[in-house]
Length: 377
Image 1: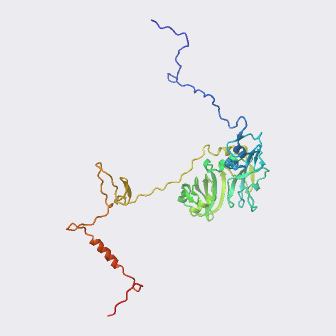
Image 2 (image 1 turned 30 degrees about the vertical axis):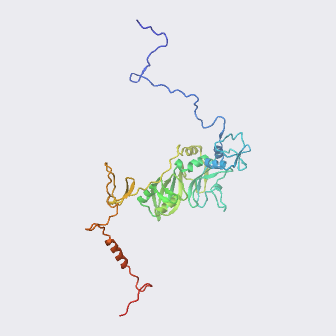
Image 3 (image 1 turned 45 degrees about the vertical axis):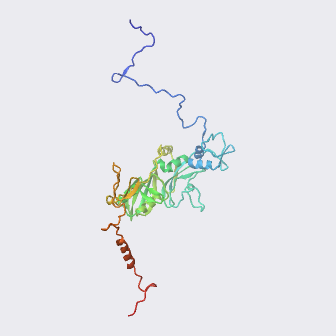
C-alpha cells in the first residue's frame, strides 16, 4: 500500500552551506534568568570599602581593616563585617566620627626634588610631597621615593588606582635612571635581572642596561615591577656599585617629560585612562624561590651515600631483596666477627692486647703532679 502524504509541517532538509554539507550549527539557547553584569548597579548601592576608597580614605585593603576595627558607622550603627552595600547619596557614613563625603577625584604628577619626604605625616615637620600640591582636597602620594631620590611621583585621592599601581601583583613597571660609581660589567647587569638577595629575599629587575658614561662612573636604566624600601640602592650595593643619583622617569605609560624639578600639574583625561589600563586584569602569581638541589657525591657508588633497602636505612651500596626472599649481604653493614684459630676458639687476645698497648703508651707529662721521682743508683 502507498504511504499517506503528511499534510503537517514540511520536512524539508536544511539548506546546504559551505561545500554542500548541511549546516548543523545551532544558536546557543539563552539561559533563563541570566543577565549581563554591569559595573554600576541599578539600585546605586556599592560595597562599603569601595565607597571609602573612592572617597580617598585609602586603598580597599586599608578600608577593609578600618571596617574590621569598628571605626565605621552607617546611619548611627557600627559596622564590622565586610561586604555591606551602601548608597552614599542616601545613607550617612562616618569614619572615625567624621562624615564621609564622596569627593571629586583628582590626579597630579610631581617631579619630586631631593630632600622631600614621601609620607602623609612627619612628627619633625619636614617638607612632604603633599605640601607641594596646591589643592584643598585630602590627597596622598602613590608609592614612595626615598628622601635622597628624585623624579616622577603621583598624587591622588583615588585609593583603588593607587593600590593597583603600587601592588607588585599587578605588574606595573617603573623605570629609573641611576648614576653609579664605576662601570658594571655585562655579567653584573645580568645578575640584576636574575636576582640579588637582600634582607627581604630575592630582588629582581625586569630590565637593566647601560646608558652612557659619566665622570667617575656611568648611567644605567633599571626597570622594576615591584617596590621595596631602597631596593635599587641595595641591589647595586650587592654587586659592588654605589649609587650617586637615582631618578624615576616613568610609571607605566606615564612619562616625566620636561616637567621642572619641584613642579606639578594635573593629569589629562587621556593620561588617566592610560593609567587605569596599565594594571594587568589578572594579578600575577607570586614568584617562588628557586629550590637548591643537593649535589650527589662523587663516591656514592663506593658506599658513601645512604639508601633505603627493605625498610632499613643501610650505609654502603644499595641493597635489595631477591625474588626468592633471600637478603643480599651488603659490604660494610655488619661488624667483622673475630677470627677463629686452629682449635676453633675465638681469638680475642689480639684486640685486648692492642687496647692494653694503647693504654700503656699513654705516659704522664714529665714534671706533672702524677710524675714518679727517678730512682738514684
